[in-house]
Image 1: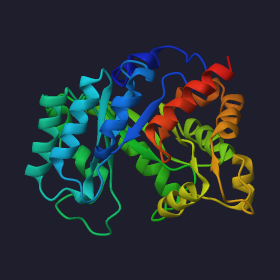
Image 2: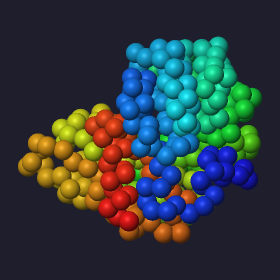
Image 3: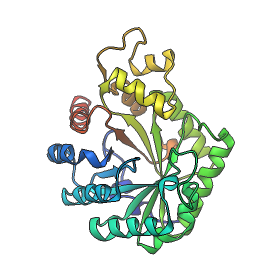
Length: 291
């Protein structure tokens, strides 16, 4: 089995608190915010760079280079259905490796219903062999504690297990990163099921950063995240009061209380819907308040 340290050295030790070893997600447009927040972010923090529609490769490459220049660990996304050709895939991959020192990537199928090129899903990207050929050490894949709109629960588990085995067999370390959610019970139950099925890959649980409640609801609807009244109440939101902002305090508290050794290696991954600087400030404030 591939060493867990290929994902990040801090995975070899137990976290010092629930927010220790967190990762962040940015778009190519967030570079200025990342520069502003950089002094408050621990060195070598993994920073994912998304692959959004309408963004050109040069912008994503520049973002990955900025992440590296600021002393963090860039982890660019590869959206299978948005890649138009093998040449585009290989060129983007090799460029971020050579110019941004990328060693870890995250692969997803992407939102488009139909592929723009030869790749229909993340498994097909992994199967090309181009990641290990480029020197990539770890590959992140998606986890879905609340299910997937196009797969049954059993299919989700089968696909995830197969990806982890394939990544490991190719000499890279698998990492599972989940969609953000508001329900700590769903995340904890999913983690327990993951380990019971023998999937030992480290997991990053997706957490929404502090944001306006309407903004959180908009992203939840777009991403298919459960936002029933009972779930939102766990998070600290009342559907009768949708004005103002909300932070993930109750969610993170519940995860910290519920996680144990049986859940395996777990860290948090923050989606900064309300802004990167605000999310980083929340993380540091939370750490101080919880000792």
